[in-house]
Structure formats: C-alpha cells, structure tokens
Image 1 (cartoon, chains in turn green, cyan):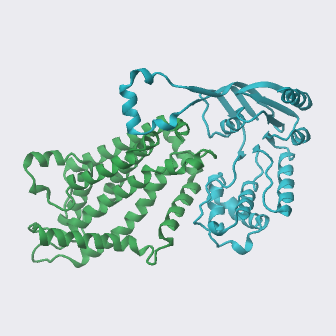
Image 2 (cartoon, one colour):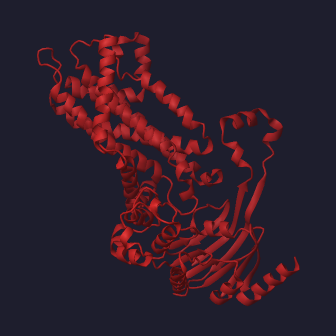
Image 3 (cartoon, helix red, strand yellow):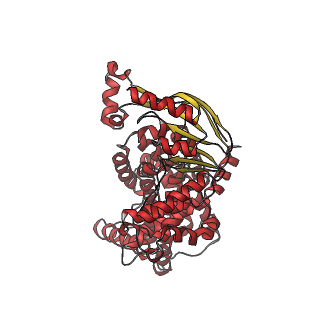
Length: 269
Length: 245
C-alpha cells in the first residue's frame, strides 16, 4: 500500500524530478570554462595530491596493493556520500519559498540531490577506471583485472545509495528544525573522513580499533568495492550482508522520520 | 468541488527564535518559560462546501486568514485539525513565478516552472509556443531570466500559470501584470478562466470585482467565517461593518 503510493507519486512527479536534476546540472557547470570535465578532473587531482602526500611524506606502503586505486575508490565513494548529504541537508530549507507557495511533495528535493550527486559519482568512475588501466605492474601483483565479481558492483552502489538517501532525509528534516545541523554535519563529515579507511590501510590500526572501524557502514561499501577491484575476490559475507542491512535500515529510518515531520516544516519557515 | 470540513490551522508564534541549538539548550533548562507557548489560530472551525462550477469570493480585512485558507485548500498547509477534500486538478495562482531560477534561461524556466506546477513534459511541449507568444518573450528565449525586467518575468510567470484549464482555480486577487497592453490581456485571460465553468475560490479586496464574478461569498474575520451566502447580502453586511469601524 505504502510502496504503491510512493511508486504512483514517483511516476506523477517524475518530470519534476528530472527538471530539478537538470537545473542543478546546468547551474553547476554554467559558469566554469571546463564545465563537466571538472567531474573527471577534480577527483583525479585530489587523488594525485593525496597520493603524493601519503606515499612520499608518510611513506605508506601496502605490499601487493595498488595504492592509487586503493585511494581512488575511497575518495570516489566517500565523495559521493559527502556531496549528496551536504547538498540534501539544505535542500528543504533553501526551497522554502517554493514549498510555501505551491504544493510539491517535499521528499522530492533530497531525492533529486542524491540522484544528481549520483550522476556526478558515475562521472567520477571514469578517472577511477583510467587509473586502474594505467597503474600497477603485473610483477608486483598490483595490476587490476576485470573479473566475474564486477557483477556485484551495482549491488554495492545500490547499498551506498540507500544509506546516503536515508541519511539525507534524516538530515534535511532535522535542518528545518535546527539550522545548527549544517555546521555540525560538516564536523561529523570530517570525522568520518578520518575514521573511514580512505587513505590508510585498516590493518595499520590496533586490532580493537579495527573491530570498531569495521562497523562503519561507509567502510563496508568502500571495502567491498576494493575487494572486487583490487583483489578480484568476493567480499566477505559480513560485508555483503552488512552493506544491505545498514543501507536498508538507514533508508527506511530516514524516510520514516521525514514522513513523520514533513507536515510540520511549514511552521518553521 | 471543494469540501472543507471543520478546518483549523494553528501557528506557533515566535517560533523563529527557536531553531538554534542555543535556544533549545536554554529552553531545556528554563522550565518556567518552556510551557509558555503562544498559539495563534489563523483559521478556526472553517466549514463549507463549494459545488462544481461555482465561483466563490473570499473577503475580509488583512490578517483575517484569507491567504491561509487558500494555502490550506491548495495543499501547501496541512490543517491542524479537520479535512480538506478537493476533486479535480487544482491550479493555484497565489504567487506567480515561484521556483523561477534566475540563472536559467526563459526556455529552461518554462519547463522547470511548468514541472513545479504539475504539468507533464508532453503538455509543455505542446503548449510551449502558446506560452512564449502570450508572454511576448520570443526574442529572449535563451536569455537568463536574471537579465529580464521584472515586468517581463511577471509576464512569463503569468503565461505559464494560466496555460492550463484547471478544474479548480484558486486566485489571490485578479492578477494583471506588465505594461498597459499586457494588463488588459492578462485580465481578460483571468476572466475567461474564472467564467469558463471551473470551480473558483477567489480572494479580493475589490467588492466591485467580487460582485461581478462571484455567486457566493465567504466573509472571514479572525480566522472564522462571519457569513457565507449570496454575494450581495454578504458584501452589504461586510461593507456596513467596515463603515462602522
């Protein structure tokens, strides 16, 4: 019943959703000379800087692992989560003038942001593939190869999408009642950036910390993608199940919270 | 058809100061102040029906709840209590150009604004030329709206909003925008929409216009219905009360 309702609404407002995503796209690239090329260039440059810092200054060395690809998977996945949640966060607040005048289902704004960030994310996969193609050497065992486990990559993406969407719904609703969330979330993202093994190997940490860090949903998505891309193997059952459970639970919780609170939004405009 | 059943709408006053962490903290420790919440009933126990094809006017002084009523009917506000039933597609003409993006061109804004108003792509493709022609923006289709004069923006917004033949039309004052020529044109367009057999809920301060267009009138004061009935009767009573005060 509820699912059917959501589905009908989605069909009804599909066009609006597309138009909102198109708007974001046009606004984002309208003024820059390189335009959409930045989606490819930005993560590439980011990775170069970090690779330089961590391999040269801190002498990170992971035997038999392609560090560039390791870094890039982390950056790209975390980048999606951070971009999507950051833009969703203010999506309700910044559309108040609209929500206050015309009836539009409010859930469409965070969804549009998450999908828009998703398109950007797919573009950042291009530099990732590029790095995979040109880096690594077969002798050191750091070359990445196409393998059968690539088939579960869409599943990984689905899980991180569900998680991000749920988080976005939760945050965008909270921000309506408490504008401080904008700043608080910036700090939380920075913390997450460090507690998620993006640029360092998890094995570097003491065992008890490893156990804790493995509970981080973002670790599950990034870790799974690395298993497939770097080591050509199936992610562990823990990761496979954990990914779905965290993603699904977050999505349902976020949606439920948003749904419960959305009628109160107009009072806080 | 519009059915309003016992609708009340409550606003919290001074909620503005409330949405920061600091205020939450203060309220948490300030037990005395916490219970003191001021309420304001923008609408109280509103109850009426509008049949299909009826044109109903809404009058009342500023702050009587007219706009709130329109927003409740159009679904922007969910009433605190009561129920609103509207059969048919609503076209709210409360504020035009909501959702225009200054950085986008006129062409892009037609589609974006159309989508916000609930039109689909096929409909907009079909009506695109008509909108452009009515708004008189043909030469400026690919210019960002921020470079438009405010009159041009208003003309474009008006043309997009009035392209439909809605089953239920909600109007806050007759909108006549733009230069003299366009004012005439837009007024005629509104009139033809109102008199074209649709169900209309129409807010105005002009008793003249109300008398011309409406068959029934609702008189609101302090969020309550003072009178609901024949146009002349209600207008007369309203006029009298205004004279006295």
